[in-house]
Length: 133
Image 1 (cartoon, rainbow, N blue to C red):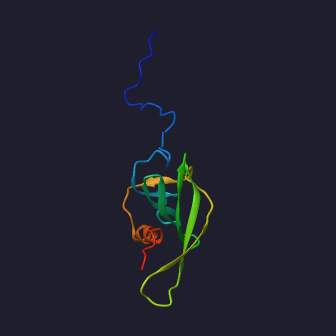
Image 2 (image 1 turned 60 degrees about the vertical axis):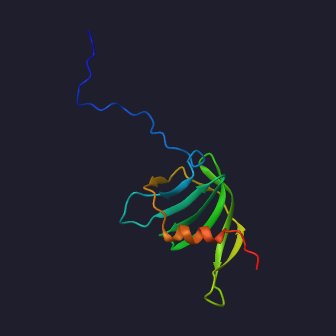
Image 3 (image 1 turned 135 degrees about the vertical axis):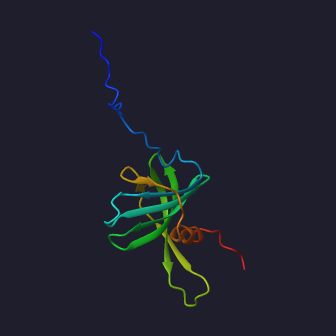
């Protein structure tokens, strides 16, 4: 007796392999914790460059967002430095206060089509090397 698979039955996928943050190539990325568009979500936009990840973590549920920089390790970003925007006394240049931050785990985030937003570009400037006067 032979088993003949039904031609309309899709093969079973045992596990969908999702790349880890550490294995991503250099470039800009967006991740979100939900595909549901009409509900609040948390979104992380980041640029991976060399051995660093710099990005924006914004939570639409709480309205909070911050900039960060860290090192990818497996599916986490560790050794995070957070940049907090300080309101400048003059409108010339944004000032940033740097502080240690908590690791970010990507196990419950889903990749979205890349496309860096304004939040990412603002965060990239927070970690630019300081220019000498």
